[in-house]
Length: 372
Image 1 (cartoon, one colour):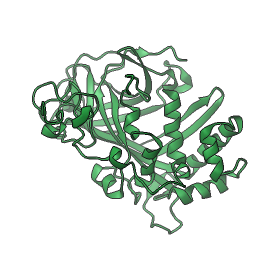
Image 2 (tube, one colour):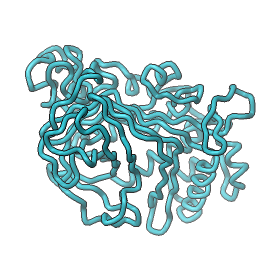
Image 3 (cartoon, helix red, strand yellow):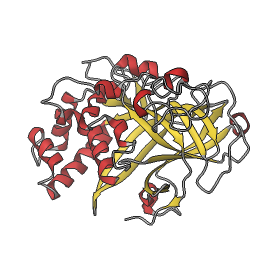
Image 4 (cartoon, one colour):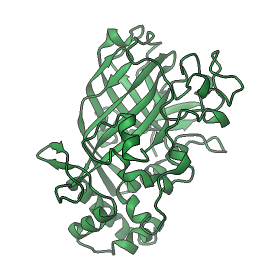
């Protein structure tokens, strides 16, 4: 799992480099935000469908059913797991059902849809809410790095294995509470691993790799109004180990998450979700330095060969930043802890707006794994 997560994070920084010689392209049909991915097993929520898109993951009424056979009625929903983006989900203004039994890491859910807006309009329609003029679409070509699109990383492959396991916990939501009753929670995000049918948190999700410490990515004061979830804005930063002893720093400023919740017996599902923030110049420079350190230690790595063709080894980070931002266009200004709009080509743009379209299905977390 970690290897694929590293590729995803690297891609966020160097997607433009790896695609510099490729055709202009978004993520094609794999990145479509339509609600009609129900057919073919990737539609409704796999046993979690129900009236009004109760699959939690894009089971969208009739469109989220199993390709016309099974429709949206009943509790079966569409075969397969996950769902399309932006399915006709529940009413965010309506209250949720009461939460089911809550264990130590609950209520919780797992990401089963992950894409990047294909265009500024798609980002605006999805509710990315960035001041960046590309509304998160600057990195849309990242989908081309992954065969089948980013969502293929969070879906079981032909062997039933999931490459990238991302989970969330709504800490403070007690059993029997509805959204309007709980009001405020803390949303924690984790990477994880599967053991049989159970899902566990990877210890690298915590400060110092110790579950006794705080999660690396946490959103206190997350508001829940009806079924609508909106986190506080947080600057998130973490080091992902590419190999032992070599961290890859990643930081996003003013990051927030929103979505429409559905409480279920084994956790929560979320539809029409967005994770949005800003990849600032200092964060990009930190990542460039981390990549250079990795490639110096691993010159035979295929990703380093790709990077080195555009940014030769030993390039000054400021020069590398200039090369990178000529390929991945900054589309916002970020100064003194504040994001603001900038005009294309004005020279004031120094940050890249990032927006991930996210949907989740309810998934109980069995605990924390022993690690590798």
